[in-house]
Amino acid sequence: MAIIEIDGRTFDVDGDGFLTNPKEWNEEVAQLFAKHDGTGDLTEQHWAVVNHIRQHWEKTDMAPMVRSICQDTGIRLRELYTLFPQGPARGACKIAGLPKPDGCV
Amino acid sequence: MMTDITDKQNKALNFLDSRLNAKLLTHLNSCVHCGLCGTSCQYYITEKNSKNMPASKVDIVASIYRRYHTFAGKHFPKLTGARDLNDQTTEEMIDDLFGRCTMCGRCVAHCSIGVDIPFVVRTGRMMLQQMDLVPKSIQSTVDAALNTGNNMAIPTQDFVDTINWLNEDLQFEVNDDEATIPLNVHGVKMLYTLNPREPKFFPLSISAIAKVFYLAKESWTISTEFYDITNYAYFVGDEEGARVITERLINEALKFGADTLILGECGHGSRAMRWEGPNWMKAKYPVKTITAVELIANYIREGRIKPDKSKITDRVTIHDPCNLVRNGGIIDEQRYIVNQCCSDFVEMTPHGVDNFCCGGGGGQLAMSEYNDRRMRIGKIKADQIRATGAKIVVTPCHNCVDQLSSLNVEYNLGVTIKTIAEIVADAL
Image (cartoon, each protein chain N blue to C red):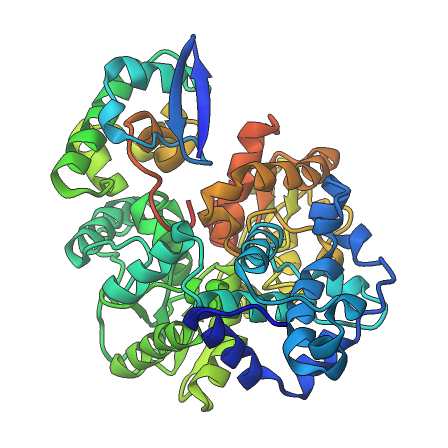
């Protein structure tokens, strides 16, 4: 457990910086996390990815496959890695307020 | 007087008792505290705290052994540094054995008398596993693998959809509309395994290996049921779980009539499957195993694929995964491949058997509670990479890839991290 401070707001996060309480998440939080991890200002393309991940997680309790992110948003895979320099898991899923996915990520 | 112990602690002591064979006794009793291991360990080099000394990680297990198994330890514990197994020592064991060791084995190579320190650390982890004290963050990965067949709990249909989606990429790459990644094909020569992070988040490495197999005209398939090469049960000291995971892949190879199981680019998974698995199964495998690295090197030697090194002119370096290199002895194959695929290859210092761990081994990547330490000890690797001036870092391990990717961002390295299959596919 840790606490991070972004622009004067504090958040409980796990050691990897994933939000501890997913209910605390909203669009403003997403933007703050994106700023904090170097992704920067979220564009329309970023939002398409973040919203898809968030909705999938709310429905299934799991992060979506990267295939479904690409197919749903129309963003090409290589483009996705550029949009989120920390990658789909440590970048996009974290910004979408998910807990850290299991495995080698 | 010994303090009262709980049922779980008793279980751990019985477990230790059952493990006290000549090998373990030797490694528990041989440390002479010379201190050489300290300067070999990434944790101790990064932070000169005595708890980071590999010898002290051995000592916490050895001190409990002495308390319950030696005359002096039973009667004069303070004089011999023997300690009870109690809440305090178990808490220290969790922090020392899970939180301060990547099981990289560099200390063993530097130990003046060859104490197998990670073997003792693993024994301590097994004792914690007996007490249900494995950190939850890594235990959930083990549970996912045992309960769903893969460590990210990917549903079969999602896996199939992803592979079929990748076919488009493959067809474009090899300019053949008929090219596909073969799923559940019976009567093939080889069964391929992979790391679930590939289909879930990083599938370009699957496209890459599929391109290599296509051009090498390999007879291969992937099982949609059991394809996960990782074995986190091995990390947490759950030998029964590790055996189950091993057996599944061997049975899967037999099911499809394959005579060879290809171990995808995963350091600990390859080690578990190739060198540890037969001990858990108490049998010689009925199929052969080969790492993807060795297989690809063979393709190039035999002329089955012909990489063009003029295609990759950026400077490339190799990161050696500890389990594959120091512990497994696969050292020259990846160098041969990279030299055939890249025109400017430079080594890190040190490299090969004396390499430094990426910092994410031994399950560290899964345990967020120790994330700060993982990133701090990774600075050694980041500095090594920067010193080479390389633009591309190649490593045959997805766990290393992920840690190196984190280091890339944290330390502004500005490099691209690739698997062996990816660098080869780029040169084809």
